Structures are given as structure tokens and as C-alpha cells.
Length: 167
Figure (spheres, rainbow, N blue to C red):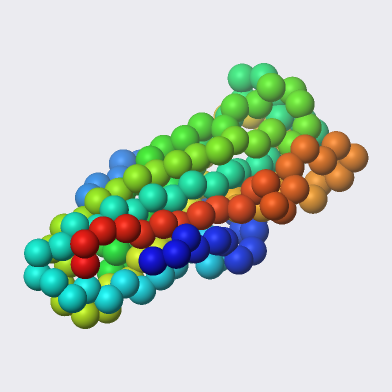
């Protein structure tokens, strides 16, 4: 299967709270936001199958007051047939520079999926923060504010999904 590229940036401004992620959690749209374009259907032909799923991308905090010591905590999750199969927590930390950004990667593996079509999707969960900063939190894209100091463009900030395996 070819690599899938995100189709549009996603701005996430709500916080869902700190919490744990568990294997097999059911996708909940009130807690997770799908990253546009990072979804795929895979057709399983064999009973005995192993699927590796790799995703990577960036987040950016469009802020001019994201000070040293402040942070945003977020999670990136991989869902197969609406069940969580991999998740990682990240913290974007402020350094008093404008438009802080960071790269993230998550790797997952599933085995013995049912024969037929199976859906893969990638989502983000903005957990919490420290500090009083303001601005947009953008995944798979660059923030437009403040525009006076761009340091990431739409080409650099894309997110990618790759599904590999024997299926």
C-alpha cells in the first residue's frame, strides 16, 4: 500500500483532560479528532496476517507567548476498526520562541484481522497544558498566527500513514 499523506491541517483548541489510553479502547469522537486524510481501508485476504502501521507528522503551537516551562500534552492514536491499537503521549514545550513545533512518530502492529475490509484511522487528543499562552494548536499543518515569524510551511508539516504487512 502506498504512503498516505494528510489532506489538510487540523486545528485543535479543546482539551479532553489527562487520562490513560488502553489497548482496544473504542474510538470516541468527543475525545479524539481525526487527522484529515490519514485513514485507509485494507483488504485482508489471509487468516494469518500481521500488519505494521507507521505514522509521523508535526504539531505547531501558533503563539507569541508560549514561554519556557509551559507545555501542551497531546496523544496520537492509531485505530483499526474503531479500536485503539497504538498510542503515544507527547509534550510540546515552550521555549519563548514564536510558533513552536515538534515532530511525532507512532508505530503499531496488529495480527489476525478478519478477512475482508478493515479500516485504519489516525487521531489526536489534546490532553492538557500548563501556562496562560494563547494561540492555535495545529497538527499536520502550519499555524497561521503569528504570521510575522513563519518557521514551518505546509510541505514540511504534512503527516504520513504507512501500512505494511502480509495480508
